[in-house]
Image (cartoon, rainbow, N blue to C red; front, side, top):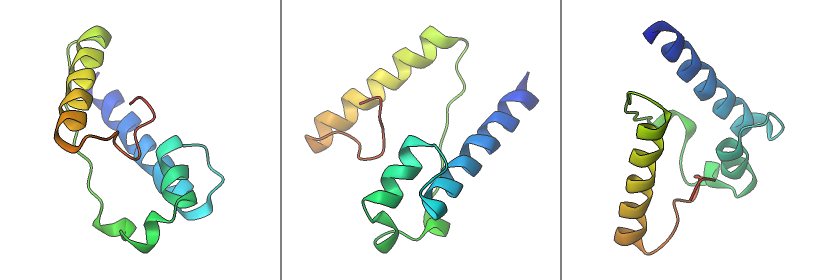
Length: 85
């Protein structure tokens, strides 16, 4: 199970990177990064990824909702690359 999750995460990161570089590969955050010119502000090789493994989908969604709520409370804005916000 963990190997599948690791492979999926690696694939998602790869899709993000491709979208940032080519502006065509579908990854919502990567396309936003590309289209809004974040590359001029943040070099792709300086970005990092954090993740948390949850027991199931509902737990993951609940955790994500709380993280988004905390971000909005702190910055009074939506996370710029998160389409779930």
